[in-house]
Image 1 (cartoon, rainbow over the protein chains, first blue to last red):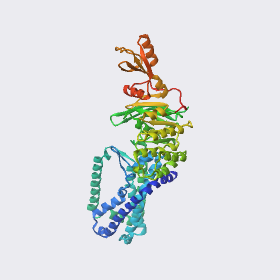
Image 2 (cartoon, each protein chain N blue to C red):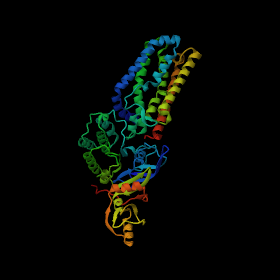
Image 3 (cartoon, each protein chain N blue to C red):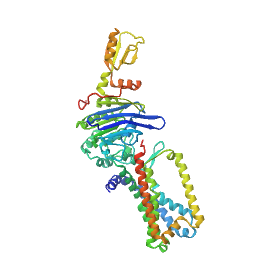
Image 4 (cartoon, rainbow over the protein chains, first blue to last red):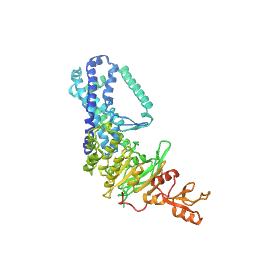
Length: 242
Length: 302
């Protein structure tokens, strides 16, 4: 608990400097949410794959929205990326656990309010309000918020630092290409085998099995949290910051 | 006395072409050690390894008897580190940086911080990225020295500073050492810093440790002889360098005895400047038998 308080103390100043970028991230998320609201009826009828792709991107990697240059994960040296603020914190008397928690606080500030508000808006301004009870809506929200942790925590993980070929320009290009291909393949397979998309099935899952959906989502979120936090601490212990 | 910094058999291989170590170094409280070496000799890597920013392949580092490369991070407030390249400060003003750094160090000296800001004339309201390199360096120092950590590590602290500021800094560091329980490890190419501040020299060449020398003792070890006549190929004990009729020896007593025994006359004998000695050490990569500690110096600085 003490480390969370310390992490918040050291993150306050970064948050203060990042306020416009956080608001910008909310605005961009808001624009996507507006698009999701308007397109939801069509999606439920026809099941467009693009809708799934954007939904996954907003809840999985929206924190990749531009941050202030000094805080953004970037090349610090040849084949070494990290957030400059993490390098700075490493030079100071800040325990690794506090640095990790600080990254999670920043990530949470960029994503959680916008995601939560977005899901609430989606519920009240689309046919979801007639399809899902409040309990099922909570299950639906938990599914997507847990995804935001399980996949989205990749962003604070990268900010801690990565070294090697895969973070060179060529390496990043290959990874992005492969990830995009796999994502398209996944969405295409779900659509071709079931005639509906990932978001649709998450609605059905939340509607039919709300308790199971919530429990599995919470387990995934906790698993993601523990895995990422362990990985980040390990990186801080092992990585050469030079 | 327990060393404040203890490095034992430290080795680090970086990329394919650079190997640091093995390094053995003990720093005791009340001493200033200059870390010197050629470009690319591994000075900054060594300092980063002490700070656990670079992880060693072999060896141990202890600060105040606490292992640096372990789970326990209680050593961190005991070191104040000023890196050569400052990363992550650009978005902040000096005032905000102070609000971030000061609470992390229990012995933070606000009065010293204000004094340094005033002496160096650093604007605290400007973003770090908007300051000149020299002013950035001054602000960096003003945010490092007042941490009052027992071990102060400075990596090229004066490389961009103007001459009056360098003098001010040297005076400040001499005052800062007064309590006698602190230690400074300073990497520098500035001979004035080394001459005026250091008690010990730790010399690296291409990652290899050439020696850990007590400064005064090292200075007295070398002498220059001007001979009356040119020498043949005679090998002279202690000789490390020869130019026409001038020879430099790292064992003047033995050299003198040899010259007398061989009836070789010399017109003058003088001691060498520290920069000449460092040049000889680095050029000759001469191993001087490892650590050559004399008595520890706790006072008597300029």
